Every structure is written in C-alpha cells, then in structure tokens.
Image 1 (cartoon, chains in turn green, orange):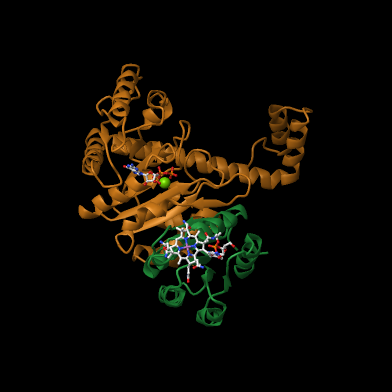
Image 2 (cartoon, rainbow over the protein chains, first blue to last red):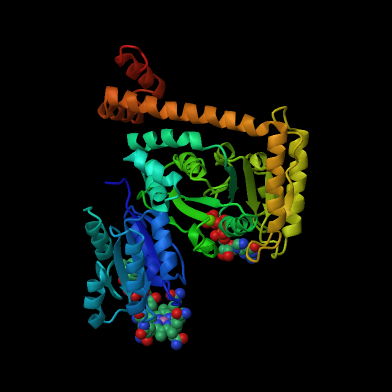
Length: 132
Length: 323
Ligand code: B12
Ligand SMILES: Nc1nc2c(ncn2[C@@H]2O[C@H](COP(=O)(O)OP(=O)(O)OP(=O)(O)O)[C@@H](O)[C@H]2O)c(=O)[nH]1
Ligand SMILES: [Mg+2]
C-alpha cells in the first residue's frame, strides 16, 4: 500500500462548470489525498496521459454538460489501452439516473449528483482504492 | 522487480517511469536499489529550476519554456512541486492547469509532486526524481518549486541554472531585496510585463543586483552577471530571450568549470542529506520511537532541554553514536 492516495480530478469536454470539481478536489485534499487538478477542457487523451504520468489510484470526472455518455467511455477505454486497468473511475455532475447503469457497465465505480456530501465521496474513493 | 522497472525506463516506457517516481516518493529499499541501477545513466540533462513568489507565473512560464526547448529539438521532463497541507497531509497539485499546451507530446513528461513536509521549496524526493528523468533521457529537466518567500532556496542545489520569477505589483522595492532569492538567481525574469510597473520592477532588480555584486564575497561567480529579462508568459513574448540566457548560462558553466564544481557540491549535499536521514532512521530503530516521544514530552514540559535529551539518548547506545 502506498503512502498517500493520488487522485486526478479532470473536467472533460467543453463544459465550463468547475465549482463541483473544485469542491471535490479540495475535499479529497482535506481528507489527506494528493489531488492533481487538470483544469477545464480536457480531451479523454489528455486525461489518460495525465493519469499515466501522475501514477494515480483514481480518476474523477466532473461533467455537467450532458456529454458524459460519449466522454466517459472514451476515458475508460483509453485507460485500458494504456495499461491502467487498476485506476478507479468516478463521475460526478449532472447525470440522469437512467444513464447510471450504462456508465457502471462501462467500468465506472460510482456516480454522484448535486447535493452529495463530500464525506460520502471521500469514503467512496477510500473504499474503492482499498483504504478505510 | 525494480531492475525490470529500470530496464523499461531506459527503453522509454513512460508507465514504468511514473511507477518508479511513486516508489521514490514513498522511499524505501526498492527505490534505492532502482536509483543505484539508474545512477550511471545520469549526468546528461541540463537541470533548470524555476522559483519565485506564489502566482508570479512560474507554471505558465514553464509551459512556454518547454515549448521553446521542444522547438529547438530537446526533450523535456518537468517536475512541478506544490505544498502539502501540514494539517491533513493532503495536497492540491494544480500546476498542470497551466501546462495544457504540452499534452500529447511524447517528448515531454510532467509530474506533480507534493512537498510532504519538506520546507525548502522542494520535496525530499525531488532531487532523486530529477535523476530518474535525467536517466530516462530527457535533455532538459525543468523543476518548478512551490511559491516561495526567501528562505526556500533548495532549488539552487538541485539545478544547474536557477531562474527567479518576479512580477510587478508585489511591492517591488521590498521584494527586490529578498536577499535569499536574489542570491540564487542565475537569470531573473520579470513576468507579467503586460502589467503596469514591469519596467520599475526590472530596474529595482538591476539596482539590487548591483548592490549585491558590490558586497559579494569571494564565493560569488563574478564572471556571470544574471540578466534581468521581461516576459509575458501568457502570450510567449520575451521567452526566446530567456531560452537564450539559459543556453548562455550552460555554456558559461561548462567553459568556467563551474558545471563540474556544482555537480561536486550537489554530490556532497546529497551524501550528507542521505547520511543524516539514514543515521536518524537507524538511531530511532535502535532506541525506539517511544524513547524519542518521552523525551519530546519532557522537553515540552520544560523538564529537560534538547541538548540534555540528545546526550542522554546517545549514551543509551553503546558506541555513543549509531551504526
Ligand atoms: C452555477 C451554474 C452555472 C455557472 C457556472 C459557474 C462555474 N464556474 O462553475 C454559469 C452561470 C457560468 C453556468 C453556465 C451555464 N450553464 Co449552468 N448551472 C449552474 C448551476 C446552477 C449550479 C452548478 C454548480 O456549480 N453547483 C454546485 C456544485 C458544488 O455542485 P455540482 O457541480 O453538482 O457538484 C456536486 C456533485 O455533482 C458531485 N460532483 C461534481 N463533480 C464531481 C466529480 C467527481 C469526481 C465526484 C466524485 C463528484 C462530483 O459532487 C459535488 C458536491 O456535491 C446548475 C444547476 C444545478 N442545480 O446543478 C446549472 C446547469 C449545470 N447549467 C446548465 C446550463 C445549460 C448552462 C449553460 C449552457 C447555460 C447557457 N445556456 O448559457 C452555461 C454553460 C457554461 C459552460 N461554459 O459550460 C444546465 C445543464 C443542463 C444539462 N447538463 O443537461 C444546469 C443543470 C441548469 C439546468 N437545470 O438547466 N452555469
Ligand atoms: N497578465 C499576465 N498574467 C499572467 C502572466 N503569466 C501568468 N499569468 C497569470 O498569473 C496567474 C498565475 O500563474 P501561474 O503560472 O499559475 O503562477 P505560478 O507562479 O505557477 O503559481 P503557483 O504555482 O501557485 O505559485 C494565472 O492566472 C496566469 O494566467 C502574464 O505574463 N501576464
Ligand atoms: Mg505553479
């Protein structure tokens, strides 16, 4: 087990809503994790490259634009192609309930919508990465 | 297992490179074994440090410098250091936000690092991570420190060339007198030159340099006068001049023999640093964590002072030292 969990928080696509991503990044930092924040307008390729270079345990995608059904599977496929199958993927933002099963089918660990407490998110990341 | 990791790194495997960096951050015997195997492959990279106060534009400048080096055909490894929170142990590493132009280039590798309690502006492991990027074949390694004040000058020991970044409007004249940072600068950059007050800041730096030179002791490299350059990292203006200055500084280091002198100084600092850590770890293993904590309690309660504690702890081990 490594000393500190490392988590990448990214905003894929053209979506400019970054409050949720920043709230989650700060909450994970306050829970003792090392959080790499990539900022806005990331392509799936950029996210996979950053996850590889930063050797993260988990990737968190924040999407409020409605483009999650195209963006999320591309990130997960990219991670697999890069040999990063062990990296857990979380998604948050505006995700309709009916899309959640398909996202989980694609390999997403968990999906969190508006109003989720940061404590819930912290615990989910810890559990999925084998801590807590 | 670490030998295999090292072989893969030397073959250019980026996932192995990322993995080894994590091992080095977490320390321990596997990391040290890998570093030993890699060490003969180091010594080729030009290590350039970028330091300065928080928010002066270090990351944005690193982004531009990296693009410039790539245009000139050099591959670039980047280590960007941000502070660990002393309260939670967590860290928010945000320097990549400014380096998005570098994505998708196999000639570039960016790694964010948290200080994990080190106070000198770098993490304990930064020097070793630089060595790994060097061994992996990156021609230039750029190291961005945390946003620093005046005491965090570790970068001067890690880098061949240190760039100190200032920006107008930080309280220019006082800023320029921050002796610690001025002294380690090989190149001074006034970034955000699109903002009012840049010329004034540059002048204040020139004056401070002049004062520093006049009072400089014999240890100062008298033949290199740090240039003061203005940049707008946001649009890249002035960055070509910084790249030229970096190349000129490298040429100066090589022709003056300073390159090898700095390597020698670094080797000695690395050696004493590693010795200190190792000796302390061995000592603690020997007397036990509890003994240490007990003395800390007593010192805090004013029942003993630090020096009495050290003498007493050392006496408990037969040699009086450790080994
Ligand atoms: C604030 C806001 C804005 C601000 C954004 C400011 C900013 N810098 O973020 C502004 C005014 C700029 C804006 C603009 C727009 N917005 Co707007 N905006 C909102 C609003 C009201 C709140 C979003 C917010 O910040 N919430 C607070 C944060 C903390 O919550 P959160 O992001 O949901 O995050 C939580 C969870 O989702 C989860 N989470 C989020 N990310 C992640 C990531 C991980 C890894 C994890 C684990 C969890 C997680 O945890 C967080 C904490 O609980 C929402 C409506 C709503 N109630 O959500 C609309 C909304 C998101 N916007 C919407 C729209 C349409 C737009 C515009 C296109 C409007 C327009 N026509 O111009 C533009 C587009 C801007 C752009 N470039 O993308 C729609 C999206 C519709 C959709 N997806 O189908 C919404 C849903 C409003 C609506 N009901 O129509 N918007
Ligand atoms: N006007 C102007 N703004 C700039 C310039 N360079 C950078 N900035 C802005 O300054 C802010 C800080 O830039 P960074 O590159 O993140 O600064 P930094 O020194 O790396 O910051 P820390 O790592 O947090 O210490 C950002 O909003 C940049 O867009 C410039 O040349 N002109
Ligand atoms: Mg920075």
